[in-house]
Image (tube, rainbow, N blue to C red; front, side):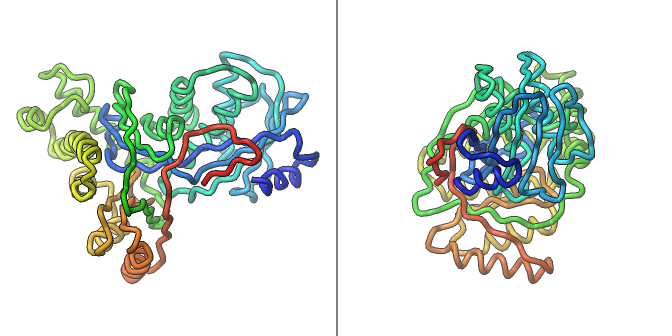
Length: 392
């Protein structure tokens, strides 16, 4: 922590005495993929890795933004009066969008110097962008004493991603990062925002993230295509059924009315509906402490994402299939938007080293380059950190 403060002063000067430090985690979704924007349930948890933000207020209206993850971009300087989207500002558009949105309703006049640092792998599907959004939102809320409650901050961050950045995401990422609790997963109904915390009692097991290290060039366009297909299918089903989202549809109703849909829509809706039901089953087995059954549901989730939603890829499948063959694996599946990014695995602690070695070797032999592995803990939501506080 102290090093981050000194890094800040090496960029902006001054002492560390008047600096404030904030943190927002990344997130991983244990099960419930591509259900959030379909009004279904998800089961994410916040991670102990995330985004740190060091700031010092200024006397003028200037805002300076610097990221240690994108040092080649340099410092992005704007003013409170000029916060419009600028493609050349790259990563800095995420905090800019948050500041612009929060400045609309409760105008503030003083700017600040800011330095960001994230230990979330960029482009890995662990929500580095939402982490930047939430750490900025919590910082602005605290520094300017705006007194905005947490769920409105979460909604505001999603709005920025949708309207300012232009990614039509659901609310899961921002919700998990804003509302996360240590050693707890969150069952979230993305249609109503009803939620409950579930203890993540992994017994003698840990969450291992495996990163394909594949650039996800198709992810944004394919994501929007899947969403558009589901929206179109919902409209057709609404001619016969009184539903506001696919999350309200049961598998029995889907089977009864699927003739209304095209072949492609049948595949996409079958995933959305079955994945929603798997997520609710996963809660039941987690509460019962049945990790073996939870692992089976993770496997079924991956197969549905691969075959019905068609968002997996050779790299993700290679990691997952190698994990399924390993004796220490409780469960494994792709997580995130797909076409690259990461898999989430629950692995017996005694077998983590051999899991990383054997799955990593199988991956490199088939794909030609290495995957990266991270053993992660379930952490807290976005917050301000005390100087001596550590993210364990």
